[in-house]
Image (tube, rainbow, N blue to C red):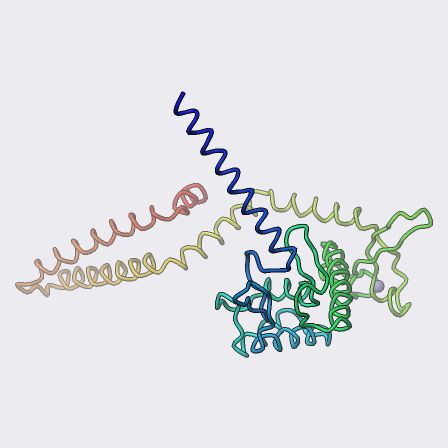
Length: 309
Ligand SMILES: [Zn+2]
């Protein structure tokens, strides 16, 4: 009984506390005071929790907007700001995400925002309206360009398809029919740009299906799989320096052993010959063991057994 009363009270107080915090934050927001979260670059929070322009960093924000309006990429702006030594309010380096957010942050035109509370001219403005608007237009334009590039990338055979008639590249093109349906096809660049070739356009889906089907058939043949497995295995083996080293030492040991055997055959035997021979044999066995262990570590050792075994 007492326990449930205490729990009820605790819940009441925590609900009340949350409510107080929420009300406090809302009151702050209505006065356009800073509540929580990261302080945008170019602002500082004063003792009364109001936004103030950071005279040191604000000019960099304007420079970033100007650079973007003049056609610089976000990556170039990141490099520029880092070169000037600008950091976030936490002292972190400037990244692509930070600049991307910066260029659309409406606080820079004086808009105060906290959750669903928005106050125009609630905080001091840093970026002139015309500059901010120009940057938004550029951002929209660049977004559309990126979408167009993506659509072009969808043509799998670009740079891989050549015209049988004139030898030029055959590249993707699309058009919208009278019904509004989009037709996508490949067209010889000779036909596309200079009427120098009379090769007809090829339907995108038809030729891509054909090429993919033939490629799959080729890839699935036993010889091809063996060849690829071999190439992959050799390239991985090349990359393992421990195996390489062990193999070299093993080779050297075996050469030394052979030389010693030849010497014995020719009757050149000294008091140390037998001892040297035993040492070399022991080294060879140790190296072999190490090599097997090393090869077992590699997931490719099983593939080799399957591929060559
Ligand atoms: Zn052609």
